[in-house]
Image 1 (cartoon, one colour):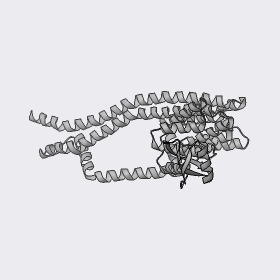
Image 2 (tube, helix red, strand yellow):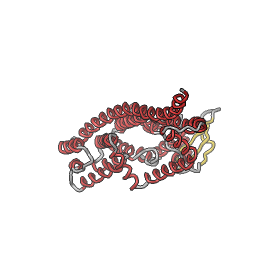
Image 3 (cartoon, helix red, strand yellow):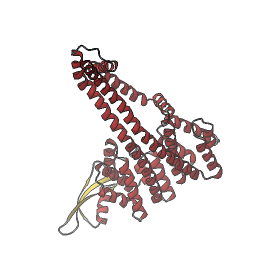
Length: 405
């Protein structure tokens, strides 16, 4: 099926232009006639609107997650109000101010208009719609409850985005403080300290030990700053390269879980995310084996992923998912026990919701505690560093005053 551009008469003095999808020029003329227009010009376009939009979106940068969340909510509202899906997509496309989202929706609209299902249409954009999103949409189409599924999916995405937003906001102040403190220390060591030291050294006086240490650090920064920056840059590149290899990701994931305080926080945050995702998938009718396959890649820690994959293999072989997790030293007993109860009672989605609620509450409280401790700790560390610098700079002055008296 191709897209034909047309120019037609709508009335005695009015001309309209547009496009229709048809198998041939004759069919395009027939469709224009059915719209009540008199065709003047029919011309086949080189590529369909769906193909053009698909190529544009696939070659463009990623669309923000927030935009897709808003689209999901708007689409759910329109479908719930009885608006056909084609018209709903077109309405959202027309009011969108983001050209990338507009191109995406044009591509989806074109695919659906050509006979594809909505889930098949969004499947063409894997850089925008993750497997979780596609699976839930397909389940909603099969059950005839697409608006309800979209609303649940929107609620899930909103919760995930809010969690990430809280985490970023909590880190913003400590990171800014660290950067400002580091810049202050470097400025004092590379610009202020050398000028004062020239005065002290010219007096021929033996400097105190703290001042000598500070002078050595200052001279080292001035002489070796290029090599210091180069070594740090190489270390960052090596770390990034290692994080892109399976062995490197596994090592870094294991290292994160061994960190004091932060390790348990990361574990609970990942388990909360997995539980919430799996609950949503099971609630929408997706089989447990497929649901675990979809939910596992959502996680960011490779060690936890590996354990869940192993437990899923045990489940495929006829075992229990919860008992397999219980045999693991990684997953807490609360998580494994509540899944076992859910499996035995046939209410696994409710058990997962309970686990997700519990871990989400614990991680939120832990985040507040960590941030409340991190800020004064950073102030204390920066105060000690700056205090040492100030004392090291003032000690020679005190000694000069003592000698003058």
